[in-house]
Length: 239
Image (cartoon, rainbow, N blue to C red):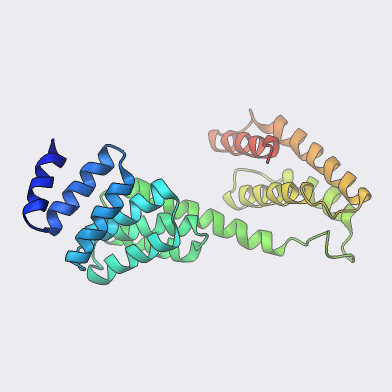
């Protein structure tokens, strides 16, 4: 019904607010293509329409998985209004998906400082970006055994992996290191260029790591249990 009356308004005159409201209404009935079209029309009529830029970005990201362009939409909105915490919060979410973790942390912090009404969500976004940023930094320091012939594979798979999984998961950094190790193992297990000897060692390391993780899933604090459950699911997941 709302769309019907908005059509009447738009047919009588082009109005940015009417296009914005019709776009919102179309989103509510899952007409996301129509919503994008109407948000773009609203912006064309009023380039400084901050929340049209914001909503356009969220629809494109949430329903079409468009990342780069959505980031640009939010940056454009911020260029018109750099005091709206929602813009920075949404930008942080999409930058995390883009693996621009430091930028996401910075923008989530801005949203918090500007008094975001959804503090829990923003803190969650910032925490996720920080964790992924730490994991990314750690992963970059791990050697690539398939391209580094000087690296001692036994040391990596039999000593390093075992020691890492014995670290206390009560500490966030240790949890990040363990997850980074598991991700690295998963990547190695899918590397078709490994020699048979190295591939066998990787399989052994995967099995040993999975056994340790499985034995720890019901021990420790709730955080530790959740960590090891996630680690177990990550190890068990077929790509």
